[in-house]
Length: 117
Image (cartoon, helix red, strand yellow):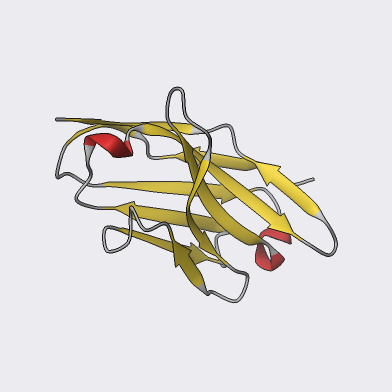
C-alpha cells in the first residue's frame, strides 16, 4: 500500500506562483510513474504533468512553459512548481502513482489551488 499526501495549495493572485508537494509513504515511490492531475468544479479530472520513474516528463499543453514537475527520490517526494498562474488553473490538484507491472494506481486526497483575477 502506498499513501500519498499533497501539500502546498492555497490562494494566489493571477501571475503568482505556488509549489505543490506530494510525499509518498514508502519506497515504492522509486519505481512509480507519478503524475499531477486537477479537477475544476463541473469538469473532468485531467492530467497536468507526469514524470516517469526514470525522470522523463510530459505536460498538458495548457501548462507548458509555466509548470515544472520534478521528483526527489531521496525524499520520496514529487513536486509541481507552478508559475504565471491563471484563474483557469483553479482546481483541486491530485497526486497519482501508478505502474503497469506490478499493477497499481494510488491517489492522494487532493489540495485546493485557487487563483484570483
